[in-house]
Structure formats: structure tokens, C-alpha cells
Image (cartoon, rainbow, N blue to C red; front, side, top):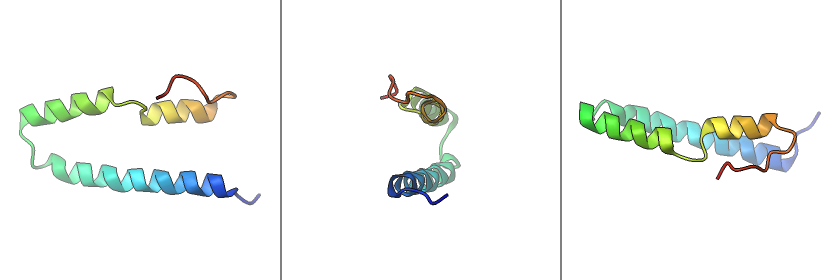
Length: 67
């Protein structure tokens, strides 16, 4: 089954996020413990999260409070 242009575009966005996460992982090595804690907390509180997106993809009605 061929993919729609929208599906391909979304998959490209996911690839962009993966590149960003690789950059973040590279920077983690330069942080001290306090900075790691702050960055970790910031990431944990970021919305929408990857889990929010996965939940929306699994749901029949993906438009819910994810933003």
C-alpha cells in the first residue's frame, strides 16, 4: 500500500527528531550532575512527548489534550 504524502512528511519529522535527540545525547557528556538533573526534568515535563504521539497514533480519535 503506497504511503500518502502526509505520512511521508510525518515520518520525515520523526527522522528530524531523532537527529535532534542524537545531538542532545552528544551534549549530555559535557554536563555536570546538577545540569543533567535540570535537563532531565525539562525533558520529562516537555509536552507533547513522544508517548503522547504514540498514544495519539494508537487511538481511534487522535485529537486529544496532547499539546
